[in-house]
Amino acid sequence: MGRMNTVRPQQHTRALALFKTMLRIRRFEETAEVAQREGEIPGTLHLSIGQEAVAAGVCSVLETTDLITSTHRGHGHSIAKGASLAAMMAELFGRVNGTCAGKGGSMHIADFSVGMLGANGVVGGGIGVAVGAAQGLRVRGNSAVTACFFGDGAVNRGPFLESLNWAATFRLPVLFVCEDNGFAAFTETARLTAGAGPTARAGAISIESVEVDGNDALAVTEAAQRMVSRMRTGEGPSFIHAKTYRLRGHTVADKGAYRDAERHAQQKLLDPILLLDRKLKEWQLVAEANSVRDEVDREITEALAIARAGSLPDPATALTDVQEVGSPV
Image (tube, rainbow, N blue to C red; front, side):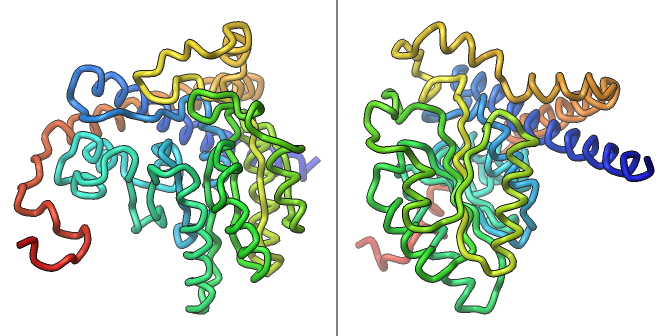
């Protein structure tokens, strides 16, 4: 009886923390979406709305000293790893107080202070970066874990297999996380992918793999904890295939006309935030959940105000911190 009393509160605490992280991601992206449509944010945005459980679950078991790489759809990963909401929003606004001084924008957000090595506009581009980072940590005698997020479209690109092979050969502590939302941009991934899928490809070169419901934050957390624990004991890379769904288009301009309307409606009912909210109600944690909502709303309001108040970069600093290429003349 005493053990049950210990376990249940721990599960509740974890669930509320995941709920907060997912809400922070959702509200950040919803706010950014409105700002972009109103012309406050330049360029486009790739939103992860509907996929929040993957980022929240995986990053909840990582340490600050662990590293991650991301994708063009990287807001959620950055937030889940601990990046500042205000600095991220300012980055989207192109302000000097952004995470990359306004030079990276949505697709290239990075925050080394929390181990976020960067989003990447190239499909599969972060996979090799993650393996290289893990190799570098190994050389330096650092045992930190590197988690690599990528979409299901990336598994058909060359760097995917090359990177998995290198990590497996040298038993590097890399957690490969495939966020399978069913689409490679505007095309159903199943129409472009031969064989049994991502998990089978990882298993073919003896990488420990698991498939998980990517809309179940608690299930993702459990799978990630198991995989990260084995990596920390030197058992080599691991692979998580998280099956999820993006509720928005490929970009904010994409209306999703290529989607099956019936399936889309069904997936809305599997929204990871709604699913966890339902669980919190079952556990009679309604007041706690409402408190989390209020806190997140305050954070987003503050982040938006800070971004709007930020200054635009001085054009003279355009090449600062970018790359040393010598004199331009």
